[in-house]
Length: 292
Image (cartoon, rainbow, N blue to C red):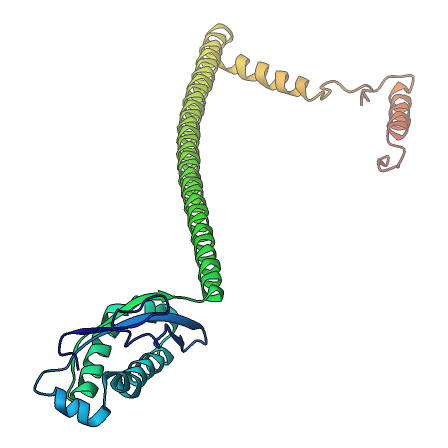
């Protein structure tokens, strides 16, 4: 019964000189997500001198201790542990699982008077199907990341373009507003100037007309005053009446003059008849009647 530290390898390609692990091999486990994979484990044990008689009494030799206790304990622990996790999680938590395995195996071996010095997880060989899946996933992630970055770049470009277009629209709108305001102000000023000019023209025209009327009236008055002085008041009045009657084409001397004078040859009666006849001819409606 060796009482020094013994290393037992669960690895197909490695075995110690004591040959206690010659029947041990790499442990094959299956993950929660259904992938089988292999892992190597090394277990270091120590049988204290004081406890060696008890171990011999129970197992007879160290080979039986390994086959009856160590092999099923370690193999079952890692198989059960793998079933609680997927491959990626198992690989990423190797250190934690190694500490957990050490504590569990120590507790079991203490019951058989054997010290569990350390438990070490060696190589973990993931399945080829998993490696292909991981590779495809990595490629997909990279492609997705590239797509996302491209989309983000496109979105940033669109955002910048929209921002620039928005600013351009604002600037154009501002410019048009300023131009409209300037045109409106110019038109307003032009309207004011035009109105002012028209008002000035009207004022000047009115003043000129008033001056003209005043001058004409003054000239007429002066002419009347000179005429009155030259003709005398009564004669001037007659002259103006005659002038106005002439403007209206009114005859002052009748075409036929009927005289009421008499002579010895009866000319008076004949002249009257001729006058009446002429009056009838002048008044075809017969409104003029001869008097008795």
